[in-house]
Figure 1 (cartoon, helix red, strand yellow):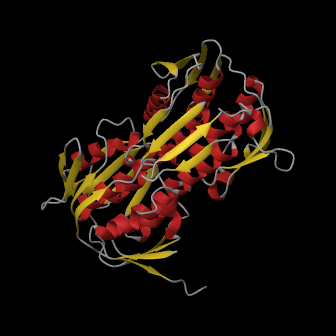
Figure 2 (cartoon, one colour):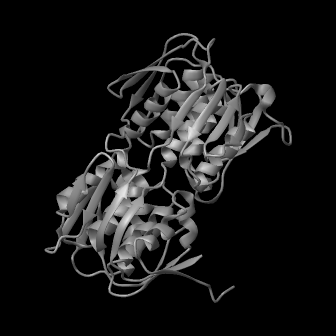
Figure 3 (cartoon, rainbow, N blue to C red):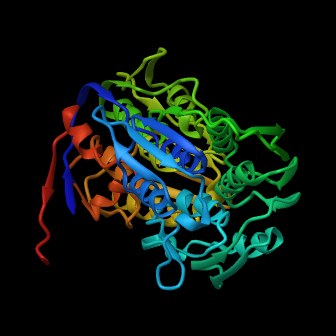
Length: 437
């Protein structure tokens, strides 16, 4: 799909999308819960749909309620519920990095041999974490030199272990949930150099909601205590609004209008809530209340800022869009976290925003964005990365000419209604057909 975004002033009120981070964790917890779970405000992104497909393949029964909620019944991954396919069960995580890293330890609770696979950029992302950790937990594993597909055979046996948390917190999320389900005595996961700590806060919040007992010792170790599962009552869980997707809406208001975004919990543990700090530091007009956030572009313009995105690397794309309109140089820390995303986002942002006239320098772990020089309309490519597509679209709202975004459907991974939502706010957006069909 090719989208064309024209310079536009936006205004109005919009609801933020649902959080795929919250939704996928809720699906995992519902799978482990022996009984009924109702998920309210479920998401519909590609990653959300992949999570739903995974828990179905692992034995969960899912019914959509008349109010849009999902009712999930599960027996907690009993091996007998996994349907053997070609000699073993098969799970496809789509392009979801969280999905592959969280659900693989959960699937390893089964005694069946299961193949874990994915698609797109997920096929090139490193998975050798499992090669090092799983044998310690009694899990047989065959991987493709640290890449997908992975073949595993459990069941996982929780023991005290030490893991490296520098690449991603998503591996830890999967282990915490699997340990919570399987622990019959107190066990400890020690973690070195943990990144993206707020995402672990979200994991622990979901686990607590489902009755698990995990003690966080300053993110250096996690004590998982066994819990009594003799009384598995029904659980209701409401998916939060998404600060990751909401960040693009808020930045759009900061650079090209005056908008109100509803549905974002200012007390959320989501890492990308830190976008509010960047919006404040750049000098945009910002009003925050419990149920809505109002943001607009000030008449005197916005200024460059310094931001540490080490624990919220998904904010890099909206931060670059914001920095492009800030007078002066913006410095963003945490570039090392960008190499293994849907694209190598440091290089991708440099390339695509360079097409739009913005100079970006990468210096070790630092990204320097020279803003206030004027954003130009251009033809850009998403690199099949949902956040790159949205960042370019937001920047296009304040550009000097129309911007054409190739492979624009990448947004479906996390925020399928993005173009619809910015159109509702007054942006001029049109889909064009490729001449190469």
